[in-house]
Image (tube, rainbow, N blue to C red; front, side, top):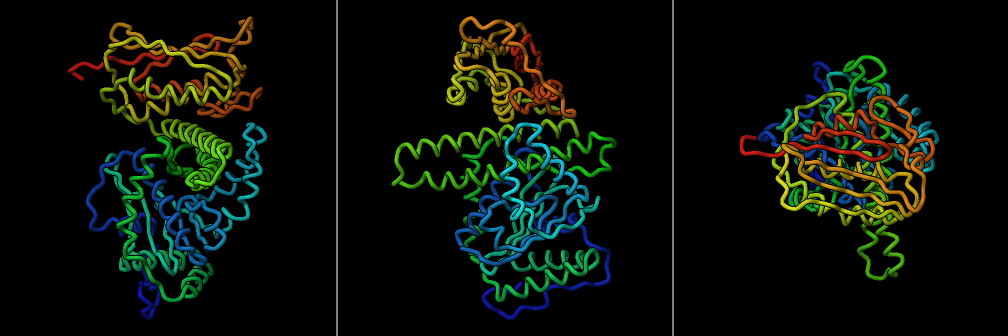
Length: 471
């Protein structure tokens, strides 16, 4: 791929070889790279931070034309980019069915996001869609070519050796385009010609040599403020799991993407506004409230999808020494602010000097927030959540108790009337609240070392094993 205005060689070479897969493409991007050291959650956070970094760079460059290619789901979500760039997305063949199912869910689930979906239908889904094959793999890939910036992103690696790949050198990008061209030539000749024409129409390609130096520090900055549960999980193919369970998990994947995308866009816009110094205090306060609401919902749906991933592929717990008392004290101020908006108070009764427990502190924070959210949804104003932590033999006992205001009857504190939606979700038809099912919650806590025991009404108890030197 030429830069600096040099004449462009033919963009595609199609030797008579087998149709390339996206696995081939990732392996080409990984050439010369050392193995990664990330787990699945960490590498997914890197992916979302990379998407945000790349999109903000393209916006800064005021890009008005270009192409993008992605798999297994659309990766770009900034409207001001989508309206200018021409896209091709390789997705599961059943994605259209999932989208129709997702479009029908909000009214049933009380999510109230139908308007945002309709608004996005003119932008987010305005791309050429092609079928993803079983041997293409499930890790996300994104290639963006514009006159001023050309970048390829992908996730790659075995479990516990995962890494984010970023390439912007002409040789790697030229090889990737050649692979994509051969794939399109075999799969959809008409799309291959359209892509070829779109690339020719870009004219001479130039690239900012300093982008690579800005890219990784920018990702590090974004990770310091991103929600811990923010991630895009892989799409499972229909062959992976028989029956309706696979369809349910695929639908959750699409739903998570549908909900997360507009919220992430809104949050990005909000954070750009709050940097201004000329906004009235009231406006600034409202913007910050919107930012918090978006983050909470992004966290909630990230948690839901991680529960779906455990259903699909249970993993062995990777637990370490964790100071649960310290985590609760550090998270409590944020929970109080969250509950205050619903006129609910939070009180803590945490014993001092408790032993550390065995858990995963990073994932546990998101899960504890999910428990607070689950227990407080639908409570009347004036209610109180009481959070206790005490020693219990070889375990530490975490208790969450709900106290209703005034002379409310005990029946008012009854557990919400939840309907099961597949193996992961439950839905309260009285409030429209979408939450993890009891079984999914129990499995999530087990993966974090906790033994989850729902009590009467909305109360719950979780037992964590105490850390000892032999662990």
